[in-house]
Figure 1: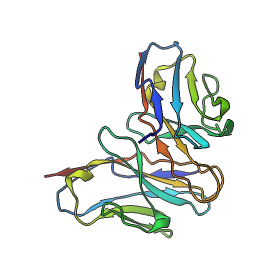
Figure 2: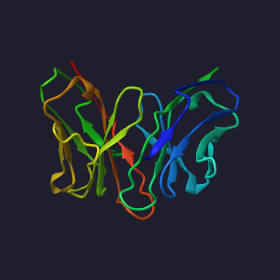
Figure 3: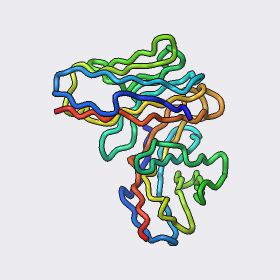
Figure 4: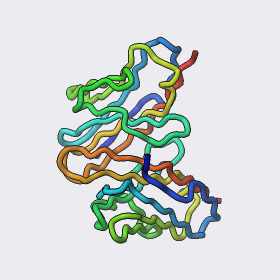
Length: 110
Length: 116
């Protein structure tokens, strides 16, 4: 069965501190992995995808196939990073059905 | 900029009543998705359309939920009759296509349904 686990429902860090949001997945085949973000009063939107190997708003995510993890990291948190973050794998081909984790609410304290 | 439009934004009904949600995807997007997001959970896909055909409706409770996408553009999601556990935010999303390289999904603002 396809499963995504984000172990922390809530995460609170101080501005300037490092941030790591954890994501573990159980998924058949070789999925692509994504992080979606929802800022207050805004729509759910794509933050980054592992295949692009890019840094978005200072965030990076490394796919660890051995540990089946895709943790999201940022070395220095900013107040504007406060949001709800969702990890989501998807089949590379075909119907492209996203399976979302339960989400982590990140709060950056000033 | 034009994005995915949904209406209504909020709806309160009593159990056993019927309700319908409307979605207008981004122009030119062939694929349309309906998700249900219960409080404290991530979005769950209910149904996916490619143009006006259903690609996946494996998690749609077909005894009470129905959806259509006539003419391959707008879509409506209906619940009849509603139950208390249907209280959730219903999200519509669209993407250019499906298959091949991932097509980013763009989400609407959602409709918050409260069933009393």
